[in-house]
Structures are given as structure tokens and as C-alpha cells.
Image (cartoon, rainbow, N blue to C red; front, side):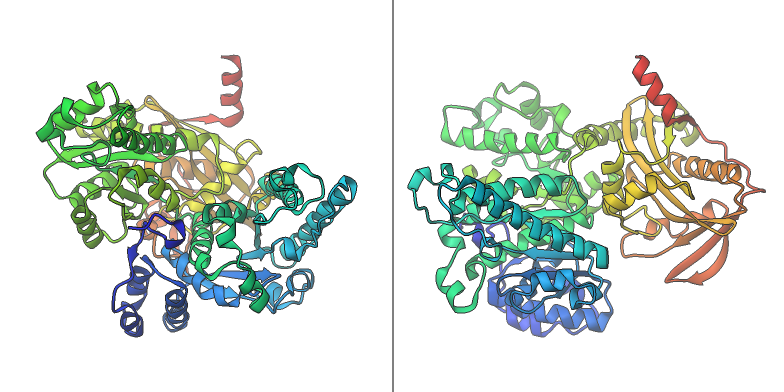
Length: 634
């Protein structure tokens, strides 16, 4: 098995009858079958073939798409089908719009251009150093600095033009380095060389994007992963102005697809780990605790340590860890409890499933315990038969192919990009602990005699306040990734959230839930907009981690109290169905809203403010300002 990243080795090889399967994509299940084909390792020709089929499926089945515009100083049209297939691999149906060769600035700056009139959700500025006039001027620091500033200003002007005309999210690229050097190893130390200017451009671009709601596609890192001499193909540039080698396009498209997927809330949340020959060498049930291979001083033992190191690093950035192993529970846990070389311990694992049931059954139990979707899980398992069983029974689970040598396990897992992120907040670092505490709550619920006594025993407090700058990044993240408990699934950028913070109209709510097991973080978001004497609930979403704890009623109490205080007559609700939010179809009727009928693609609901009686809930309401003051005093 290849470990070359341009081969996408974590994906299954394309089926032998790939083209026949693409031609057969005409029936009612063609969308699901296309998604399965997209999960394979495809070359540029295969990506192009499947990409054309996706266009037909979207048109025939009226599939809701995300629209991507692409502007480049190179020839990008041949990549567009690859972008669509790779985005589907990461859960997004993508509709692409390109532009004429080297028309990036004209398209971005003209409000009436095709790209701006298309009202794209995202626009990719696929530029490299050849489109930004970064001409070498060795030794001329001031002149080179001016060229870099000019290039950054040019990109910023295009960015402003696109955002101002269409309101899209702009995806900006770092510039891949060039493989040639005038000064050898001294190249980047000489002001004015191309490498020196690219370094400075990339550094300042990263800083500029980090403070915005736009996205960064790190093509510089991608090209280094591929290898600069493999990324750049001077023949293809000379013949057709292709910005990278054809062999690199599948990986480039995958990086773009996973980024758009992350922006659409499709990133995975949980890593499910096999044990024998995945976290350690050998079979603990047969070899005993002392017989497994793990630890420093042994090449195989160090390879398995690297897997555990990667799992811990993922946990530190918010990925939940779980175990699914065909094993005796006590024997399996003994390694986590007593083996001196183990980095992973029981406290790092949110759900531990070691038994003799099949893997798919255990994985479903893990998802149910954590209250997350099956499509949030990634299984790391060395056994090809187990991987095949899970793929067949649970196709929503991501199951990377693994090479025979465990030294490549961690590298392969991380290269696959299942846990792509567009932001990193303080709450992300706490997420694994929060889900682990949720598992403890589930145990307490199992021991409780009734639901009400269980909820009272949690000693819950809801810390409620309007949107603010402190929580802005987390609020934006929740709005763009929450799919299941989300009444309208409307998405907002960070700049739009910032505008809502200062608005005196309507209502914004962030709700943090704390109980005796710990802080669940911000778990509910509400946006109400005025409509004459009424409020319309534009956005109402909640984390599935806190369902069935009366937080829905608590949130409604807060909305209605604020509406009464503002003199609002009626609060209107709107449910817009998607393929992910069926769980909240009955949300409004359960809370006492009156149905008004269908409209705007969903159902409309109404609740009278004057006659509303607050629900009795086992949750204490604490104003955000009061909570902050208490925290400061302690």
C-alpha cells in the first residue's frame, strides 16, 4: 500500500467497474451511490467522470447545493469536477462556477461580474506568485517589501470586492514556495528573493485571515507535503498554465473539500480506537499484559506509541476518544490501568466498548451514548475484515485504510483530514471532557427512578446572555456546524455575528449549561428578528449533548420573558426541514406553538406572548453578567 499522500492512501481503491457504476447513476438512489463512489481513491480522469455525473444528479434530483466560485491566474476549469467530487466525499454537494483565464481581478472587482451575480457561498482565490507580480529583486529589501505589500493589497481589494458585492465567504490561499533558489540554502535570508517574498506574504496573509470570517487554504503546506518539485510542473504551466501538476490535483481537491466541509459543520467529532495491533502490538487476551508490544526501545513499540500520541493530541484539540474492541472488558482495561508504557488511560476514553459483539453494533452504541450522529465517527482499526464489516453496515462512519506497518498509522489518520477545523476556541479544548461527563450523566440516568428526580439531581444552571465578543468565535462555530437540533440551519459569518452584537433590535441569546459534573459550554443559540409588533425566531439551535434536560423549555422561557419586556405581541417560529434536522420537526408544537401553515419551504408557528405561562423547569437561570461577576470575585 502506498504512503504517498498524493495517492490518498487512506481511501479504498476505485472499483474495477468504476465507469460502469458511474453510468448507472440514474435511479432514485443515485445520490447515495454517488456519495459512496466519491469515497474511493480516484485519479483526475475518474474525478472528472464522476464530477460530470454529479452535475446531472443535482439538476435531476434538485439537490440543495453549496455554490463555489473559483478565480485564478491559472487554468482551473479542469479541476472543477474534482472539487465537486472531493466536497461530496466530505459531505457537501458542490456547484462550481469558474471564470475565464487570468480574469480574477476583473471578476472580483466588478459588482456585475458573473461570479458576483451568482451569489456564491464561497469564492476561492486560487492565486500563486505568478499572478501577484512577486518578481525577484535580490538585496533590495525596501523594493521587495513594497512588492509584497502591493500583492497583499491586491488580494485584499479582491476580497473586499467579493464580500461587498455578494456577501460570500472568501477562501484565500497561501502561496506554494518555488523549488528553485538563486542562493541555495541562503535563499530565504536574502531580502528580495522569490522565496523571501513568498514567506512574508504567507505570514501576513495568515494573520489577516485569522482575524476575519474568511477561510485559509494552506496550499503552501500542501505543496510541501507533496514535495515542491512534484507540485510544480513547468511543462504543464508552459502548455496550459496549469497551477500545479495533474497528479497533485486529487489531493488539492480533497484539502479544499475538507475545508468547505468543516465550514458546513461536516467535520468528524469522535475517534473510535481498536486495541489489539492498533494501540499495541499483539493480542492482549492471548499474549497477556506483559506480552503486548509497546514502548520505547523497540521500533514496533514506538510505532504504537505514536498512534497513542496522535490520539491524545486530537483529544487535546477537542476530539472525543472511544474504544471498540473484541475483547474481555477487564483484560482490555488492564492495559490502560497498569501498563507502564501506555499513554492513553481510562480517563481519556469517553466510551469503552470491549466485548464480543460485532464492531458495527458497538459503534452504534458509542454514538448513542455520546448522543452524536453516526457520521461523526472515525474508526481506526488495523484489521481489514473489521474495516469492511463496518463500512458495509455503517457507511456513514469514516474508516481509513491502513498500511501494514504501524509506523504509518498515525500519519495516515492525520493526513486524511477527518477532523478539519476552521477555528479553535477555549471550549474546543474542553469538548472531550464534556462528552466524557455526558457519559457519566447517562450512567446516573440509568440509576435514577424517574426523569424528574434525575434532572433535579444534576443541579443545573443556565447562564444566559446576549451575544458578545468573548463568545463570538464559539457562537459562529455553533451556527455553522450544528445540523440536527437546528430549526432553520441558517449560517452566519463572524462579521455578521459581530453586527448582531451591537444591534438593539430583536434578541440574541447564548446559553451555557453548568451542572454538578462540570461546564457543558455554550449549548444553545437563539436569534430573534423584529417583524412589526412581532418577533420571528430566525435561528434556534442546541447541542445534542443536552437534549431531554428541559433546556428547550428553559430557552423558551427566556425568549418569552425578553419578548414581554420588549412589548412584543407574538413570537413566530419557522421550521425549515433538511436531511439532518428531522428530530426537531415537532419542536414548536411540543412547546405549545400554534401552527399557521406552510411557507418558505417549511412550516410556520405562532405563540402569544401575553398568554404564555412559563414552564416549570429544574434549571436555575443566571444572567451572564452576574456569572462573570461571581467568577471575578472568586
